[in-house]
Amino acid sequence: MVCSSGLLAVLLMILESTRPGLPSPLRPICDLRVLDRFIKEARDTEATMRGCREGCSLGEPLAVPLTSVDFAVWEKKDFAEQTQEVQAGLWLLGQAVGSARASVTDAALHSLIDSSSRNIYSIGQVLHSLNIQEYTPSTGMSGGEDTWRVSTVSELFQVQTNFLRGKVRLLLSTAPACNKDGS
Image 1 (cartoon, rainbow, N blue to C red):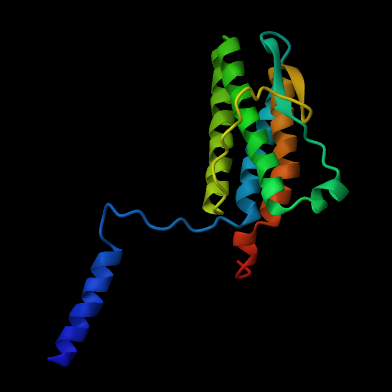
Image 2 (image 1 turned 135 degrees about the horizontal axis):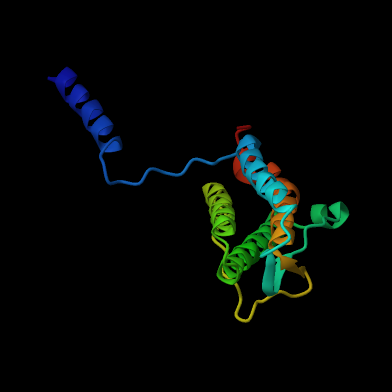
């Protein structure tokens, strides 16, 4: 009888862990090759836009995050401050991409902008997998000292590429969730 109750317990554990409808814990996405794929997509979009002359201007300049990194300053920040800066930048990029979509009429540009929007959302999901909380902007945030303005879709995509290559890469490369067990 002991053998069958032990088998029953194992069976119940297996069934419990495979039961549909229960969310499984999100595993950290620590492989920087995942980020490299998003960077490549952003770079390809940026390259596509380089030759754009007509219909690429935005109705009004849009606030975007600064992409330059002062490594001495960055390394003095704790992970929470770095996270806040990256999350705020991604939020600002998302806002700019949404505004860009509303201001252009070209269907091909809409497709590129939609792809860019999905890219930003996916980066947010990668951050979420690292137990980084979703960013909630403070009221009235529209772009302060850590921002600058772009006036074309091409400039917007260039900022996105540089932001991913810089601050997002730096954050992911030092994320505690990735450094705990060496994964």
